[in-house]
Image (cartoon, rainbow, N blue to C red; front, top):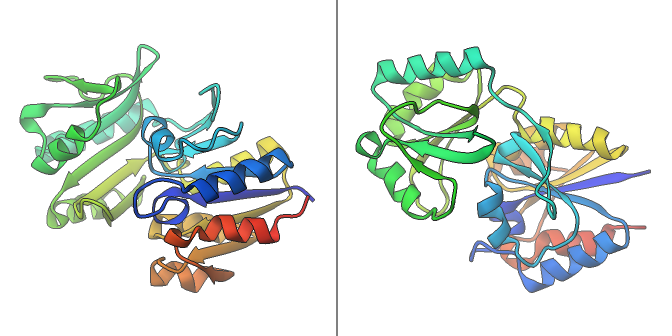
Length: 268
């Protein structure tokens, strides 16, 4: 029986320093060499996830942007993708223009991944986040915010403002509304309906021809993958709702919980 093991990153595979430990890297590299089928599923982009997991060099597929993409860890080839439909982009553009809100829009423009924003119309929370991202994707513009093949929209603002957006949009799109564990700012992430960790894991399960799924997580955005997994493990620092859904609760992210579990339980 082939098993696919998938871990969340922040708060689960990553420690409080936002990186995988030497021990975690060594264990996963060793087990992947032995044949373990492993991936991580994160809200992060490739550019943000890679530095945090720089000790993981194994040829494994990565689930990024909460399921919008599955990318090969070495070649950066997109294995599977979930984009917004053109009519959905038009609807979202119209909605936010009516609200006078200008989110950060992630899209492929001329075959290059970019995140676009209008500096003069962005919230201070969005500008603070953008300051932490210094890579080739950054695309400050004056208009045409929704150009290209859009796959992810990020709103960072007050809880009150984003809560109203969430209630308006949650039935039509995948909407993740939560407080960031690092900055403590409120985020609303909007993705296509099929762009969930759960759907991406099922896609990857079929792609790799696996029979079983085992997952690890800590937050509310991990609930969907816990619901489709054969076994699910919440780290000790996980939210109450996730622990209630879990097969079991393991050590915390600062104790290399996922690596310890894999080293003890993985069988060739």
